[in-house]
Image 1 (cartoon, rainbow, N blue to C red):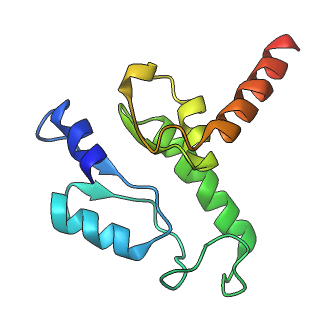
Image 2: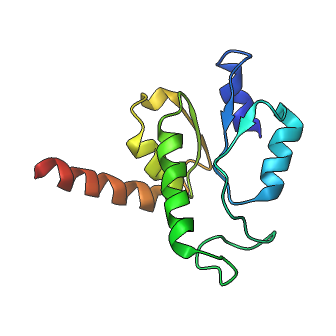
Length: 130
């Protein structure tokens, strides 16, 4: 939450938060801290606490879950400021697609995501060459 607090301190007091998470406890925590009206997310199926949403046998529709993840990445990329975890390829994708400058990105665990970031840069270079 410290990174979110720092990001919000750089924005107006009426700033809303788009939260991309597969954890209902994180959703509740953010609503408790920042207010129900201020925190938004795209509705999706969430796994039981402590389980991953991906490759989860309890997921009712894997294709829908994949589409929901892409929606989250797209919505995150449209945000004015991003709080990204360095160990998440999901965060790396949102940052890669964002049109906002690097200075609008706050990173949590910034050095742990070097492999996904290197991979995304390589993909981007290949896409530019074509």
